[in-house]
Length: 251
Image (tube, rainbow, N blue to C red; front, side, top):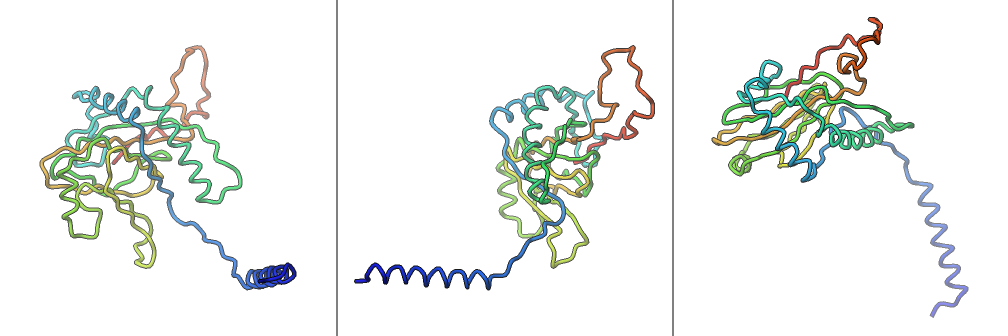
């Protein structure tokens, strides 16, 4: 049985070895690189609101293909974003926090965001989105419906790309020793937020079903063209007006 003195000496020896070990440890830091893409899950409440808003917007006057890159027949603009904007604000605030950690920021981001464009995609058999990017600062895509037939098709897919119905993000020069490609097969209620300039594409599927996604573009510096004038007597200096009137959204 060890005496009290033996126990003390034992602890001293352990502490000494621990300090010597720490002296020999190599300090390192990982430099984050490339775009920051964040995947989240929307709530059931927001899912229902989005589903209802998308159903209500399916009208011929809301068709949006002329503004989009997709080879998709049924794409409709969501014009009334009153119910949607507060939910998107919450998710974008989370993105900002992740982005601050990603870039090792000394000060937290302080941005005011507004949705500049939003639309719903009813993607069907053989339809797809070619590689493209978006305007504004951030973009997002939310998945409302991913049929079982597409899930089965994806599981049976043997290739190395995102597969049927998948979304792929592309960045960099394609060096095989670097991560320049991210591919994901989405589930219902998945939300991706990413830089608007990030190239991405959506693969087609063979199943005779409909996959529903909602996408949008977000601006952090709100242009004057997006602000409604409430007082006709207030004059706006022409030099203060935003010159960026391109709210083209593509996904």
